[in-house]
Length: 416
Ligand SMILES: *Cc1c(COP(=O)(O)O)cnc(C)c1O
Image 1 (cartoon, rainbow, N blue to C red):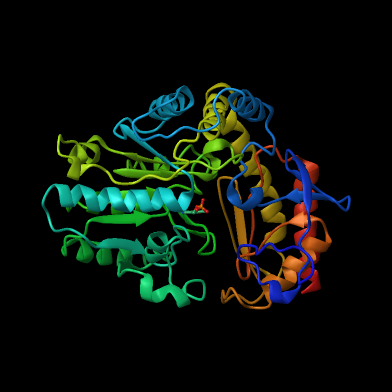
Image 2: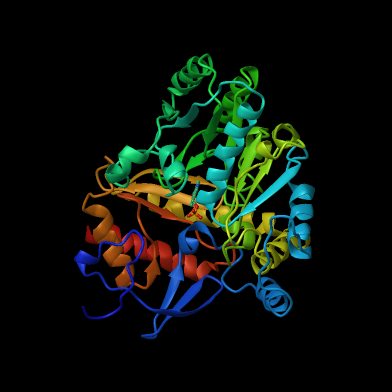
């Protein structure tokens, strides 16, 4: 074996593609050991909101590291965690009264599913099925994969995945089919519905209108089906608002947050739950405890970063930046949309996307890898999902860098 022993995620090492070594980041830029300045046009896989190394977040991490690095969270607490929980309570829907910490988006989904099943189990009602939307992605752990789309990514693990009820993606013009399918599924008394609100990220940046989400929530409530909103990607301004559900006037029973929770600086996640879900676990009987933990639950340094992010949201005009970035993205997308290789251009909040080439999304199609190679050569961190090209930069990206990204995309399309 030569070179690095590292086995990278979602990386086919057999293709021998170069793996750049990044030494530092600043705002929307990453710098490599070989002297390149790379524009981070996908926010380091959807996590970086304000920009790399935001001074307030870096400062909070440094100060906390000097005080308390790590502490068991079962039966103990600390100020950064309390501050995050209070901060979330102040800006998230008031009915989400409880904050459960974990350390990744996938884990926050596992926790949500366990809370939903625990809720029905503790109430003595036999409701176990989970309803999911076609093409969804909720993470890579076994439970999160089970409620996500099946395909080449998880074929080998199929024997471990549990059965779910799948409703179709609400294709434009055929939304009623989704609502009808959900209505039918609800008659079987499932435990919960889990959705990515307004946009399916890994599924190919597929957007659907707020009214569909509103209707899904209404049907769920009418049948007492718990509504789990996976806002791991969509929250923290990504879709133009603090949460995507807000745009549909929907308040979920369970809300999953991660990625931008710390501004994208260090790993942390929360699952927020309604009082009814908490109460179903509240008892003097230890058997009704919510049995979930991981070693680094509510790590103090990660919580300090999240508390700093919450302060930024309180004190800085983040939503104004988000709105401005949305407009700047739209102007460039409009310019690109006349290109014959650009299909179905769309934007929600700070996310712009389109399909490149002749359409027909297939992750393993040649278009994605060819574009990826082109973007690498041009010092752009753009990573198509199959033939879906998307731009999702940190909110601090300036016009010059955004122009470089779109110029790079245009040249890439020309080369195809
Ligand atoms: C990224 C993502 C996850 C998984 O989060 P990780 O932190 O990568 O485990 C779950 N749900 C959605 C919608 C995501 O975009």
